[in-house]
Length: 490
Image 1 (cartoon, one colour):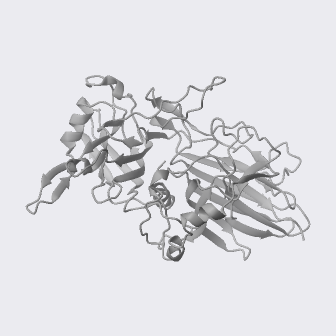
Image 2 (spheres, helix red, strand yellow):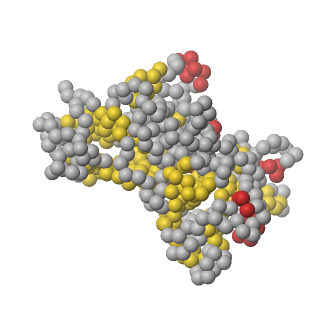
Image 3 (cartoon, helix red, strand yellow):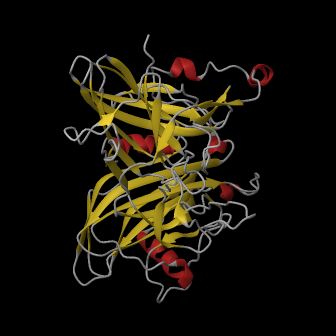
């Protein structure tokens, strides 16, 4: 995560919230006025999410997160003929696949006598055709943003509606998720590449600049949906910009060439420093849980599901097989989002994507499912003879494996750590029976209850479908829950 960049507040095109962004109380007053967070319980059940991840392979490059030493971030090339065979995982993509990359670059030991330490670090994603016929690779959608200046971690209100013409974001993971929810293709990606036999092409060759920043630290998040008509290998790598002096003494940077990337792939080792190695799973008694960061190929790009009553539930109606009966008045139930090992919220369900191949010192699972799309349909049904007010909200309860109380734990007042920062899209039929779409940017602290994404007034014996879509942002912390609540009767 890039949480340590939150102090760098720069401007952003969000006019509807700009007046609120820079009107926060001073830190000293916050310390004096904010008491310690206290836990409280909301009695409600948590259900496992029906369905599962699809089988789309994801090139998942997130370790090391903080890159100091240039080298190979992730390579699925065969190890044969490579100078450092252990840097290559031998996995070919064919058909639909994703590329996800999330890395940070920071200048180390900088002083005026070592200005070269401020040279940009380039992130290159290379795609290779190992076959004997040309391979076509299409970019279906894709986005890549820097923390600065593209998407700084500015302070935003918890709940901000936005539109494609008036975007709201905080951090590169947030902005990437917003673009991908709208199926955009940023112009840095080629719409199509024809890769001749035995040759390579660059999907991306973009810098992480730090020269003008104080402190000199920056990050880049990338997600792209791709499709090939033949097998390809993929590698993400990091190397410094090509630098020359301008006639006025300025520094002129340019991207490494394809040949330079191919040379690094052939001769280089893994980029460093390496992240903390994960603890083997299942965790042995007494061992410390270390999830680790992901570097490998994970299985699953989307979790698509229709949430409905269990077939053997007393609420299930054979005539309405696709119904999700709303809770009784004053009650609620939730579904887990991005549940993970030791954080299943009482469901026993671990949603983390399986790793098909991985480096031995990186995560055993894709904990947190960064970049995974959750597309959930809720066919709500009011079985009562009275109108009911129903809300649907995304929440960030305190992480637990087995629920210690009869419900979810939250904090009041809230702590300072942000655990979710990104967009959610909701589609539904309004109370006026009109189709509606809401795009909402959420910022949630650890232990924060959710503001309703949608509020519906459901007449007796009526049905209403709500669809919720989100791409799990790269700078968030799982788990979350999607909560359906029926307001208490007056």
